[in-house]
Length: 299
Image 1 (cartoon, rainbow, N blue to C red):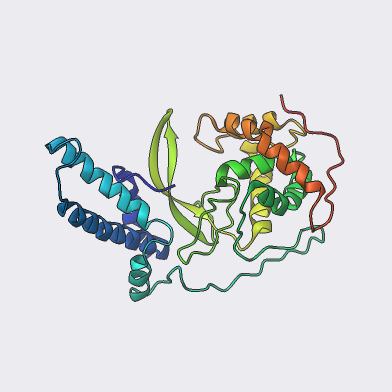
Image 2: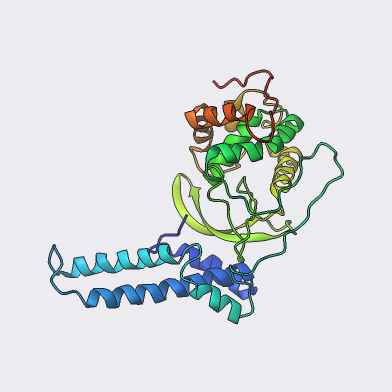
């Protein structure tokens, strides 16, 4: 999600990253410059109006119009943008989004681990997202003794059914499907992103660092390790087929600051989109996927 132009908390995180010569922050700052350039263009375009605005001229109108142009410029510069940010990053020694990154290879000795997907995921709908993610969800769900549908619902919530997976500075997917942050003990890749956090029920936008993985299997492996090894997630483990118990335990353990996190997962679990996607697992060019097991119970 694009940050709001009126949110100033994001800049403290960018400043700290810049002091450490963080390449992710370099891309963010270049994007801010591109937004400033676009804002100037919009301002000059409005200066050439041939008639008075529909609601007349006033200080309030000009102020709101200026804020609208700022936010519009920020939206236009997000994602690929117009290419100015890429040019700046390249000139300053970073990697632009147009640079084709070398895909990483990630392998484990476990024979039951599904084949890793190292290409950028391009899920056009929830059905494709569920079909690609389901084998990994089943594998990790069996390990944690939780419902694989619950893992799917959490990943769908965190990524918008795979359409909003965070990207690295060069445009390559982070494969972070669970919104796991990169703490001080994380030694792998990471991405810096603006995110909405809740403090005592009040939403605030902040710039945080999130983990980046080489493929889908890796994000599920890391998620499994996080739930297994951290004592605070003890109640999450062994929640069995009860998807709501899983979601509630996650929220109670502090996985997310959103006070509605558990209910949002539950709504996805019971939603028509999930049910339709799960039915689609039984057909397709990749052959049938076994879903004949005890049905998930959602209370």
